[in-house]
Amino acid sequence: MGIPRHIGLIAGGLDLPVNVAKSVIESGDRLTVIEIDPDCPAGQFEGAMRFPLAKFGKVLKTMEKAGVTHVCLAGHVGRPDFSNFKPDLSAMRYLPGTLKAAKEGDDALMRHVMGIFETRGFEIVSAQTLCQSLLLAAGPAGLHSISADQRADAQRAMEVAQLIGEKDIGQGAVVVNGVVLAVEAQEGTDAMLERVAQLPSALRGDAVSRAGVLAKRLKSGQDRRVDLPTIGPKTVELAAAAGLAGIIADAGEAFVIERAETVRLADEHGLFLVGLPKGG
Image (cartoon, rainbow, N blue to C red; front, top):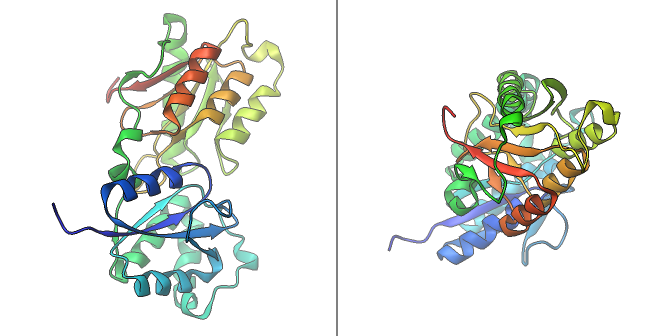
């Protein structure tokens, strides 16, 4: 057995950081958790330290002092309001590069942040490396498969998700009967699905006659060490409320959080949850 690593988990919102922390502890590696306020719910991690994003310099110093060797960024972290951003003194040196990267898009910003960690001697480790069991496998995750009627929508939704990803806009798209009803941007998948649910019923399916597909896809050219698409119970509930027939993502490139509950809900609502093989 190799020497245990010391993982520094930068925890944002949603459920992925909790799963990462559990996997790290079970592996025997050491763990230090930094909760990014206000994205990470307070009290999720025992002994965690909590800093606003503006105190990035303090985050770096805290991890160096703790002896962290590897850094994992997991969970949703909202894009900061740079017009009102007041970094601590240690982080001021990184601000010009951060502002420049932010103008280029979210992926450029994340690459910049990971680069800062690397220049300080930390090795970046991806959440999927630590939690491989959470990745969506090829094929149906539950009882339902993509029907022949939904295949065209599934293909188009993946194509649209690919296109918006190439422009660093978002990772999700909804297509119903060949019509693009929504694409994900800064609001995130949940808010996008809530918008779809508010559309006239003539444009979408319902609980009796489901139609359409939510596709989640990694952005083209995105650094795969951070921000893989995530599907969880809330995703399924919102997709069901929007009248959709199912959810798809590339196999091995999306997380399924709380898998048992997520699959149970999909089965209960009659939705398919399917991982598409590469080239599929």
